[in-house]
Amino acid sequence: METKILELQNVTKVFPGVKALDNVQFDLRQGEIHCLMGENGAGKSTFIKVITGVHAPDEGEMLLGGEPVLFRTPREAYKAGIAAIYQHVTAYPDLTVAENIFMGHERVTPWTRRIDWARMHREAQDLLDSLDANFSSRERMGNLSVARQQIVEIAKALSAQARVLVMDEPTAALTRYESEELYRITEDLRNSGVSIIFISHRMEDIWRLADRVTVFRDGRYIDTWEAREITQHDLVVAMVGREISHLFPKRKVKTGDEILRVEKLGRRGFFQDISFSLKQGEILALTGLVGAGRTEVCEALYGVCSWDSGRVFLEGAPYRPGSPRQALEAGIGALPEDRQLEGLILQWEIGKNISLASLGEVSRRGWIQIARERDYAGGLAKKLSVKAPSIFTRVAALSGGNQQKVVVAKILSRDLKVIILDEPTKGVDVGAKAAIYEIIGDLAEQGYGIILVSSEMPEVLGLSDRIVVMKRGRVTAHMETARATQEEILRAAMVSDQKEMAHGEA
Image (cartoon, rainbow, N blue to C red; front, side):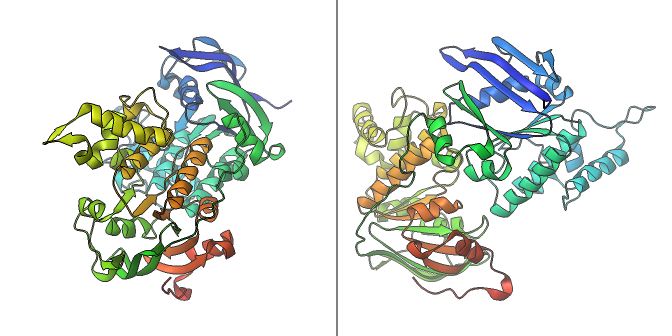
């Protein structure tokens, strides 16, 4: 019988008005990768906080190495060998990598009790080398990419001899290459005997890494399977509690006239010679690895920044916005990649966020009419099925998928022709993804021209009509989706500098 290093038995955690965990079961074997899945609100975050000592369970028991444990603080859990790595790395950006790794358990000389800097940097570099990290322990943490910061967090866990490592959505902000590197490190850790709880919304993470998969739904334990014994369809049904017959809605939309044309657009240091067109009712996917310049092109079209060369035509007329406000007035709206930082005011109510882009619709003589704002924003929220007690609920209290719907509702509050969606399903669960895909399909049917920026190949192939692939600020391929394959897209996104593909106009 395989050794269980961690076990939760009948664990319940209650907050005022909410049962976050309800009689939950979970076990983790020695040297395995156990994936935990579930929609937003399934209880995954509370589960992490229970096993890392942030919250004590109200009922039930947790066993570590077969012995009952009750952690009162995260420090107690950390000393016991349980460490967590989060999607948004909590690091000290102005300190060195070595200082971040040994924060809280610094190496000191026994006779002076002063920090032994030479030893600390030496041990930190040894840990980095063991993970095949190609950067120095003396590097400033704030200079590192998200992927490298996660490697530092793994090194920090190893420095404390962590036996259990919790990885919460670690690939959400990574490129495909960076994800592969993280997969390799994770598998190496498993092979060395570390037990890993891997939490993710991405199916490719599960099939690539998992030994077993457990699903939570609405704070309850649903079941556990060997990863090789469950299909994607059954996993989705377990998470959402219902059948999702078509994740990507099959649309038959007759495209209209050309609505947007981009000709040899360039911005020094960011992108050059970008050309494509977009028709009414068409979904054009703009894809490539993170850093390819996709977001920068969209920011130029939305008026966040300007361009140095090339031309853009909107409905046949020259178009050059000086600001996002001018872009909105011309008929181009955008959903930013980071919805919380750039798309929402989290402490505001749903209604105020939605009406923010169209105050003229809800005001009179310079004064906002509360009743008009309520009806106007409430209608859009209802149209997009935003799940909340009321439009007076603060956006910060919503799940990621519902926050994304609020941003879309804000966009739809304007009279638009083109909608730019930058990673619209980033960080949301499969149920919310299906709802957002339905919304995108509906928008295309209504005649909007849609530019979809996405790094997820199933999303690109499942939603778009045409595909533009970018690498290092250049277009490397134009493809008709019906004839495109994932392999062809990746080949174009990763094409070598010596063999850059010809970039033509759409």
